Image (cartoon, rainbow, N blue to C red; front, side, top):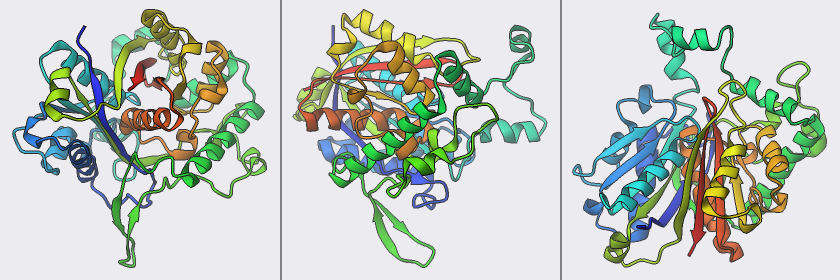
Length: 390
């Protein structure tokens, strides 16, 4: 079977809501990542066959095919096409799947998979809330209401349902959240993110300029005691804002090429895409799909959980990776070794290729071979990607 190779992987450092990246239009931010991928590979920009970009809030500044807007904001020529993908939090991981499938099919040779989300400029839920206020209805159709009567699809409720189903308590979740920050601090101080981060120029309110290269959400002075004091999201629940992913602005991307594209570029590949899996599950509990999806992916790939050297499981809420660890029996020392979205932020549609950039560079730094990435997604979905570092 034809192969798909990743030859470049990059991301911006995360920006907090209203923080350092708030002044950047999302298409310009994504365009900067596209330029970085081109620069790192030395590819003739005109040779890029397609740009596939994940984005959840496709409204306002992220409407009208944000991927095409990013191309027009970059050094790529107008001849390069682009399309936008919404698989909720897995949008740019799905973009990577589509890119890999394109080059493996032989129909394209050089494809950029990317993602962008400015949660400051296009707040979460904008694409639903604004039409609702304008009297244009909701995504919940009469047929869905008959199938799921009196049910509200909610990731917050789903995260609590996961905690209850798998017997997780607040103490476990607080400890996991604190560990996410500690690992992110250690990675930042050791320069573990340096090769994956795209420097972004910023100007503050006083007109001072700087370069943004450090994830803004990390609590460098945080303590476990302070985390334990944070108010619960709901009475009787187990989760708090401190054990939930941070609202984040950011962009990320990877360049995926075929064997022909690899020869044309003349660069060494970072990784080979070994396996792709998608799975749907219960849309009410919503967030547990990564568990069966991981087990299915490993079975189809002919691998065991112990064959994988490093895992990236998106920390949408602490209950998700903690339940995933419990059910897969994975080694917790292999999971999110540089921290996760609880500390680094979750820029929705950008998180898929963001995690992939981190996974590839973490494998390289440790001299390891196999990586697995998965994340929970709205609607009860999950993507799983297994890569081999080369």
